[in-house]
Image 1 (cartoon, rainbow, N blue to C red):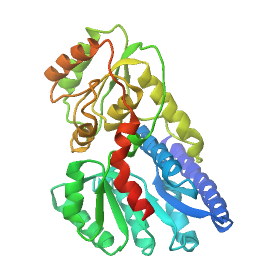
Image 2 (tube, one colour; image 1 turned 120 degrees about the vertical axis):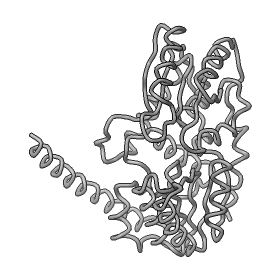
Image 3 (tube, rainbow, N blue to C red; image 1 turned 180 degrees about the vertical axis):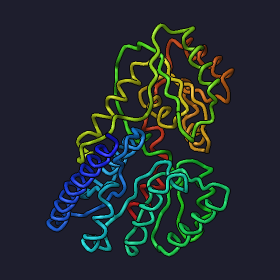
Image 4 (cartoon, rainbow, N blue to C red; image 1 turned 180 degrees about the horizontal axis):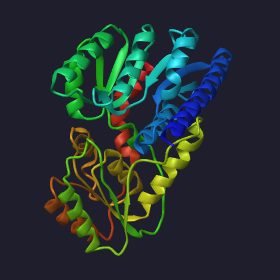
Length: 354
């Protein structure tokens, strides 16, 4: 059975690659026939992380608001290698290039790091803008080696703009990449606006189960017990969707994100240690208790919106217990208004239009 599954998976992979390449060929035809201004968005996700899909949608909304006259060509993770190898020359030096943002800048996610390097190396004449990112290189030989390689590649590009999404990443990018321009804005999902009016029904746990979590198994058990003492219904969820089999990810991305937003908008309270668990609470007006993770991205993003009463950053389970009771005591509170934070995207808007 294992051998059969391996053969089946290999066959499916080959078929997917053929279909994916055919879609890239079609995009190349559209590029050749495009007479308007053009921009390219590279490295949008094909994996199951819903936070990254929210980022992709946020980037498109940013384009709509600030580059309405441009035709957008989106080249996702799975399409990049084939597109760059075969159609690199279809990209003109005056075309704008953007690279997907998120929390994968560094050596923790080497697939994403290598894809990012590929864009920077292959389009040396274009203005390239990296959407808001968190940077993290491990403090060991591997981290130092990968940082040096990225520094060498980025330092050779004369018109590369790096965007950090929190202060710590801003400081590190300035330190690591002195030859490149570095700017600071919030996570791009905070640029977006959604409207949900749903009855609140349950408590929602969105807790990491990977290398980024700093919560112990005991911590997680205590969080669940605290919620059980206060709620009849508790939903355990994550920021991942089912395996994506549709190669045209754009057709399913909106549905995936909308379903997750609906889940958050029906919660009376959310307890999470995920950055975009917190962000989805912000934009749906959902009371949230948020823990940190292994790097600076959660606390750094929280600092942009800490004026919001319904988002509580906590350092331990005891603080979470108190914060939950405080949030449940609110009869009314001011919800997030994206217009208040959009002024912080001016550095990105100005550099796009220079």
